[in-house]
Length: 183
Image 1 (cartoon, rainbow, N blue to C red):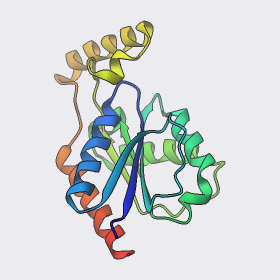
Image 2 (cartoon, one colour):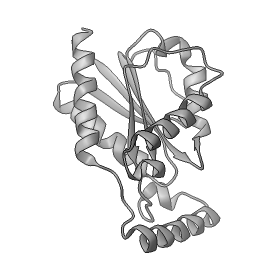
Image 3 (cartoon, rainbow, N blue to C red):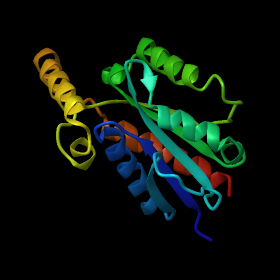
């Protein structure tokens, strides 16, 4: 029987959504059935065999809906394989200091949630998107803030996308291997 995986994401402008799509694609290629779900959608998760949950982090805070989803679904998440990933500007460079700081933000946001034995936590660089469906659904003020951020980041860093797709795919492969071993 094919394992059913929920790849859930909480995104602002679509960066984490794009990462979730790549992760789900790899699971599909490995023979799993995946559903990609915006964590804002209220859904019954009882039929899933494993969970891959991602959030963007802004100003040292994971998205509120991500934290609420984990709190609400804690009983399922402790019983089934669960991995987290975070997409964050702080990870523009993968250093021990940046990893520690980003993990601290993630752990601090979950401090009121009873412990969950996560398979792993992937930490990935972010990007600044000013196009796509997620971006277009934002209110005009937030869009203006994102455009301003993009301009500033490009001036300072000479690019606006710090995602390392090879790292994301490698992390996903390790999660796939772990989940297959739990069969």
